[in-house]
Amino acid sequence: MKRFDRIYLVSQSPRRRELLKQIGVTAEVLLLRSAPGRPEDVDETPFPEEDPLQYAQRIAVAKAEAGWRRMTERGLPRRPMLGADTTVTLEGEIFGKPADRDDAAAILRRLSGRRHRVITSVAMTYEERTELRTSVSEVEFRPLGDADIRRYVASGEPMDKAGAYGIQGRAAAFIANLSGSYTGVMGLPLFETAQLLDHFKVRFNE
Image (cartoon, rainbow, N blue to C red; front, side):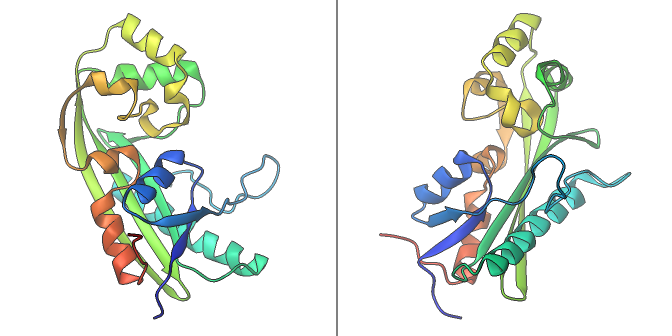
């Protein structure tokens, strides 16, 4: 396999782009179809009784493979395609991005004073080959009062994040303990991602 100077990233998350840049990887964003009223490239609805780990892995692979199909349809230069999914889970329940502020507040009340898991799966596709890596972390929140939750939701920070919080933002003050990958909780575990990049012969910039 030839070496690549850059990859495609199937994600709208600025945090994932920043993390790739941090380790010297150039990524071009490739957006999937998700417009209302049109078929989505990846349906992120969990299957009934689907295990959160299986869900995160399935969605990460689906994003990478859907991105590859879009790339070939558009006639873009062929480069490795990176897809990722971050899932926050407590007692088997999957918490995605909140639907609205009330939903964000409800999720934060569920996480308050408890330990939950953050699963981030990363998949890379090139031609017929797809590889997957997964990071599982445990995060413990301190007890949150109504004022804590109200202020945080009012900041707008929870609205585009799985589990309604961002570890790299104001919610850092909520976290009493973290066991696992800080960057995995952010949305892209760099240890596992670097393994994939190396396997697919992606160059790291000096």
